[in-house]
Length: 507
Image (cartoon, rainbow, N blue to C red):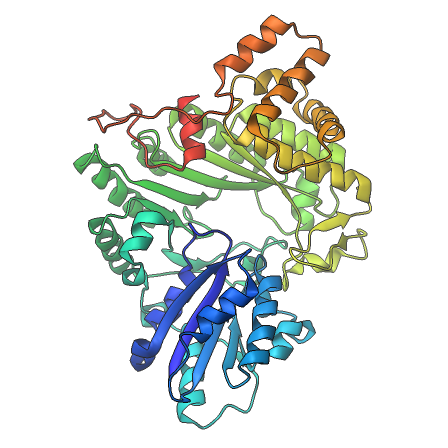
């Protein structure tokens, strides 16, 4: 017998935490369980060929478990269909958030043999035992059981040395979320459930000893329990103090309006290039927040972002969502300008998506929500934003990522935005699209030239435009220190931060 755990990651640099949880909790089946990660964009035939090359020998039972997500559902559907064509004897089990809700409507579920919804840590091994040893499961759909957190075996030893050297390591100190934001799958959680902190920190210690330096926490609410947050941050601070020439980098999701003094004190100790926060604002409109069940003190959130920008070296990645029910372009623009004024390093301009199972669907009729029927189910129009305007916002989002978030136009961007950032960048976005008819594959030197051309059209002289563009990277990555050096706190350390953040550091 053989059990193959497979998924298609969005990028090679991503390592699937979910599959490693399954493998770690397979019990006496673990020795027969093997991990196979692919990347979206791979040929379906190549994926099927590689899976079949690892099936059980001599007619033994082969189970293939697929992790299915919003970014890989279409390609995984093709893989499952082809597997069933060329090797119908293989038992296919599906799991993951994309197939855990509204599953009866999905073609991939019809093609598969079994489905595990929700938590799979215990349910998947139990299902495999039944398939292999009987009694054969009668039901196709198996509702995942949520075990006590202490019963879940942590998976971090399953990160290979290759993973540690070449990939982002995802970790979690807790699961779930106490908040009920209706656009998020975590709205279905009752609360957040922590793992035993000492055990978790021991796993981080082991990873660090093996050479891991970049840790991305997937916890929805890292700063929910301040005592836990401080202990985790102290783990990283201890590593930084002990090895300033070999720094670590940690990424956390932060609740924006919950930043007590004790946490600020800890944050302020991190040197540049070692700490990143992802902060979800989503909307500054109180009526929209109430509509989608989002509780947020906007004044406190703004104050905390301002403090982080002025009193810490943390890199801030702050999210806004366009297309929420009840929000028009003017309201979104006000929120965008308010966020720009706080000057976070990156503003993630997102477009609302209808994740399967999320309560956002309840507003469909009242607010005229129209979603793309194909993944990733992006909002196409609302009663406040028509289709054409929504497409302008989509292009704005893409160009914002290329120009603003990239860090390559740090000195040019303030001139481009002026006193009315949203309106000015929207005008630039409309013009840029008219010139390129594209939002992807725009070479950086061409993009820099177009930015310069736009600024000249706004009345800036050639000398001014050339001077400001020359202070930016003009398509070249920043030159970071070629060799480590001992640094004091708050001095720019030799960075293990992702390259885009490194550009912000040097700007």
